[in-house]
Length: 130
Image 1 (cartoon, rainbow, N blue to C red):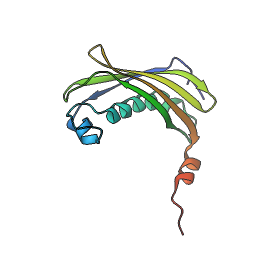
Image 2: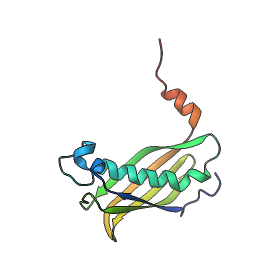
Image 3: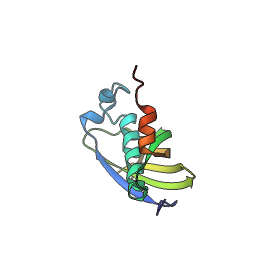
């Protein structure tokens, strides 16, 4: 698996736009950062952390997440997801992600990704044709 060892870290930023609000992503009726957009940011940081270390033909897929969304974030603010790989168990990769806004914790996320062969995964997911 290359350098994909526990302790690997990456930061990913997001400036909250109208398309990231709970109103727009369908998770509520407020014009603030929606939890699904927050999860997408965290997953993207985890993917970015390992992308250069994956063998040819492999990818990772999200399998599980636990989110504690602690602070409302308005449009225009920039948040940063700090993703850390904390465990690599066979095909399972475990991450901790802290999302911050100017040093204040917006969310704490635990996330699991699973390594898969890209082609086999896509074949299994393809619709069955009659």
